[in-house]
Image (cartoon, rainbow, N blue to C red; front, side, top):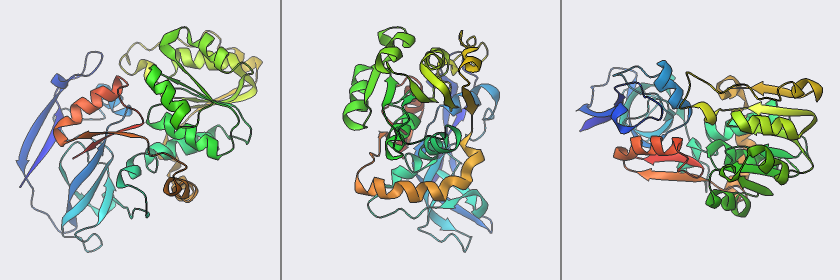
Length: 329
């Protein structure tokens, strides 16, 4: 048997392409005491990886970090016997050699697909939950706007906001099909295609009475539009900035209406889910019953085969996915 992995071989100029990566194959390493060999089942590709490509979070010619679920197929660690399902971050490869310190054991709940633990029940869903509960401090009846709402975190945020008792939920997306998906399948009250005109006008039409909370996955013109319609003492949970991922060295200028944050007594807070991992148990207790019962959709796009991972990553950055983008090895 052999291990196939992807390496980054150059820094991208603008949007990443297949030429920025290469596939390498090597024999499976022999295990030392305390190590296990994991055969990866699902790999996650995520927007934050674009920043790693630019700033060196991934070393050129080295292994690439990424959220992964796999099965232990060889073990020299008694606490991780063969057959154990684990989560780890040694992604972009068919196999990984890890220790107990590198992994978290997963026991999927009955009626919940394994892939959900990289999406709605993984870091994606936890990000949405933390952003809404801890950062935005969503209250029942609050009206919410979510940008990039058909993506992984956005679609989780919309569904979780509904469970938390939000009032009107509005989303933005990049196509008419995604807009329909938001209102038909995910429970959004209104949605718009941000290509259809100025975001400020589109949001004002979709939320004519204003909003209390903005879950920001985009930045740029979406943030400016949200500031316009936020009510007094509105809150922004700033999660991502899709608007500048492929232009990190010359980011867009600040929103023109930034001083309205003072005039309306708004609060804007950025956050990283890695600083809130203590919320995982509370989050899973809250959400698993709803996933099992079908009230929450496991919203994902799955690319088949390890060879598809680069295309899945670049496609995700172009917005080709609905929900979480995964690769089934």
